[in-house]
Every structure is written in structure tokens, then in C-alpha cells.
Length: 176
Image 1 (cartoon, one colour):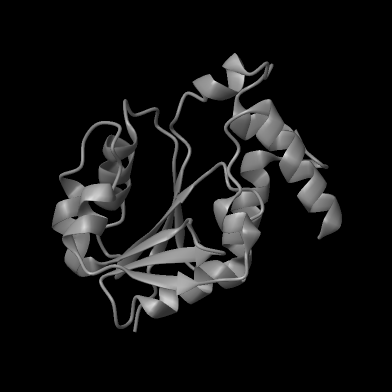
Image 2 (tube, one colour):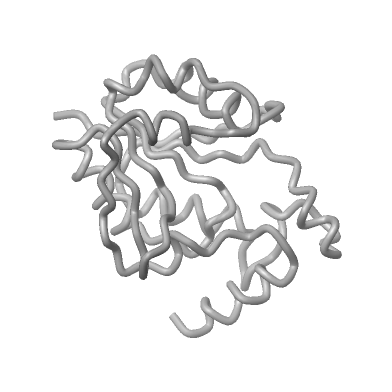
């Protein structure tokens, strides 16, 4: 059985981060000794899953997802992971990937909060290819019987949108 591909979304403009006082793009902001994006990519590599970085600067998240699915036509499914989740754990990626073996859509759940990556089986491919704009894959999640996979990974809900988010992630990172 082939493994699903992790799609790391890195096409956004990071406007909220800049508006909050950020002096660089949020994915290039330093978190400890690495950038936010490097932390995310390190976790993806540690998962052992195939992956694709989508950083072509698309107009919206839906456009980015569709482009990444087009770029990975042989994938058996996809895990959609925004690049601004630097504390995500490789174990969470593997757990979502495994759950795709028996479900079309898998959403990780940490303490009642939905997180990322959201997993989609190959059966969702045509719908993912049709995404456009800023909405992302929410319509595909709603159209399928998504299961919520309980995980013990605060990283799946710790995204970086503001300087304050970056500071909170730094405090969490020190505690890991």
C-alpha cells in the first residue's frame, strides 16, 4: 500500500503576522534556532511520509491545495498541512495517514479543537482539484463523513498568525 503525501502549504502572504509587528514573513520568522517553516519541514521529514512543498504564491488556500494535488498525481491520498505549524509531531502525521486506510477524510482533534493536517483519501482528489479561493478544503470535509482522530499533540493546533502566536510557540517549544 502506498503512503499518502503530505502537502505543506507555504504560499500565503502572512499579512496578519506583518500587521501584528512581524518584520519578516511568518514562515521565515525565527523560532529557537530554526525558522517556522524549517520546524514544520523537519517534522514532515521525521514522519517518513512522502511530501510536497507548495510555495508558488497562489491567490488563495484552495488554489494552493489544487495545485499541490495536481503536482502529486500518484499520491494515494493527501495530508494538508499549513507551513505555519512548527510544533506538529511526526507521530501525528503518521496517525492521520494510517487512519486514511479506512476513512475518506480524517481531522486531528486536540482537546476538542480541530487541527491539522487534515487527511484526504484519493477518492477526494477530484474535489480537491476543483478548489479555488481562500476557503481551503472545508467543503470537501463537509461533503464526506470526516472522522475526528484524537491526538495528544498541541502542535496540530499551534499555528503562527501573529507575533504573539510566535512567542507562545517559543514558550511551548522550551517546555517540550
